[in-house]
Image 1: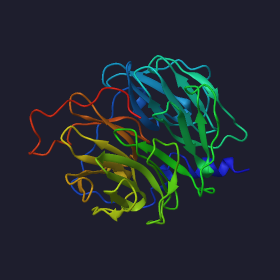
Image 2: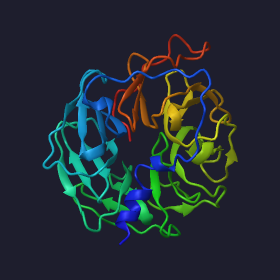
Image 3: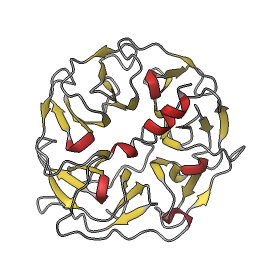
Length: 337
């Protein structure tokens, strides 16, 4: 049975942080007081109700005050399964996925959730979920598993993806206009779509390790990030890739785009690196501690909120670059996919 192996391998890919890093000029990141300051949390999403976070023991929580306080969401049953990602299609409708093939759906911005699928015996971990422009939801996960829903997340069916084999699929990501998509996974797997996720093609391999995330930076520029500080950049919508310059070989699991235009990547050892040149090169802006940062979002105040394997953490030390315009727009408070 492959499920125990999948649970071990796909545990939010945090266990892939195999390299240690000795931080320079390290600063501790203060934790947020509450029950969330010690839990493993893997995903932060925005909805019309506020911020929604998910993680260990099947917890889904909601904050109405920009992450200062949190309350548990209403769930039909408290499963002992890890939540790996939460995504919203609009202010109200969202999907959460996790281990044991767990799928939950909300229609009230994350206040309450309904279980759509759970298979303790044969359910392999689901790692990422998103809604395509067609209205179809798509979820991907361990051992090449891909699922689709054509009724807004109520029911799900297997979806075949060519050339994936048994490789873990770690993240699905969209361009700003929803036309171009990437799926990234282990053993250097990158799939790309130029038709809103209706069809997929395998990109010629350019790296042998795992990728944990992908982010679109506008026009035809993408960045993918993964194990041991391996970050690559494409300027032709994922057809070809060039390695970016990074100062430390640590696994990078999360990304965020700041109001100052910088791309931030975060991961092992509390490290956050930033790029001012659309992902071509990065510098360390924060490091220190034992936490592995798994997701991130910028708050209205400009602070960054991080999910980690040691709880939620707020960081006020990552200041914008001096060139940042005073008229920079406030971060998007709408749903994120």
